[in-house]
Length: 407
Image (cartoon, rainbow, N blue to C red; front, side):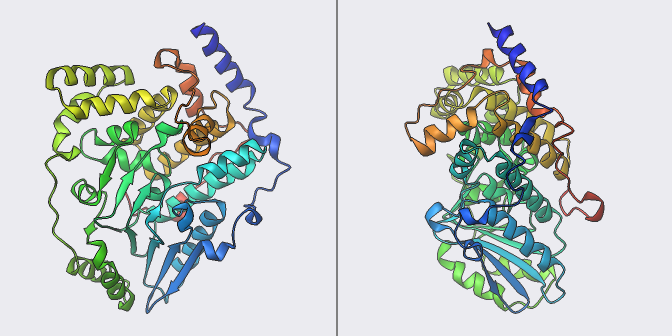
């Protein structure tokens, strides 16, 4: 039965390369802004002395990114980079979130309506913007106050300065929704200490602001209550010098102390468990650790792994491991392939099942396909990483014309 499933997955993968997502070419390749609120209201702009601030403004949706927002951010940042009167750029969110990631429910609805092309366009625009962030020629300040989830981290972490607060909650929950950590996550997670990135990607565990400072995901920490003062100070700066911005941020920074219960105090055991080559070996190591130590952390991690999509776990682990040896543009190109395969349902519908179970019906009882790790074949996984067909262009990034800031 397993071999039959594997063969069928491979057959579908090969046979659909030619047709792929191109069945939906009748739909516009441009974002359908009519689906959303007024574009300028979704990302508002504040003009300052010698800077600009982009404000994610969908507080009722925790500033989740849709096609219109990604396209507007890309246009704004490109125009600001070319403007000699602008010294640096700032990004923040309105309400209690910085950004909760991609608007997964909208993607789910678009595909169910047959508009796969617009979903593809979303990922293309989003990943191109992430690359712009990672290669931006001007200093960038991201204020990650509140929920910072998935692609929400991706649009901020490649920038020069990342300010976190006592309200910051960072999380990559994708495997719990049948997806994979994307928008550059395989780049920045793979560069965390030891195998912390694998742990965060596979379990979807959270980090707070102090922990983000400790593992260098963030550069500065301040209390939420002091943010207004920090922003006022930044707004008065007339500079394009990173050192001047750094001095201003440090001036209003707060001392941080890592909690003894933090995951960062368990890096030795994280490495011992999550350094293995397969999900099965990781689970075995966690079960052994749980039996030897009676540590509640092990039990919680095991529970998260067993709740996640088996296929997503294996795809995500491979993606993070490949990211260790790749540049940002290479990571984004690979993530683009994986994302297009996920929304195409070539091998599995786990992304749509995960969104249904967690965000639409909210029964929290996804029926994963395949339902277990042992039923996920190598051919299924390879399909996610295979080059796209000649009718489906790969992600094209302007690598030749931009000098990457992040290496």
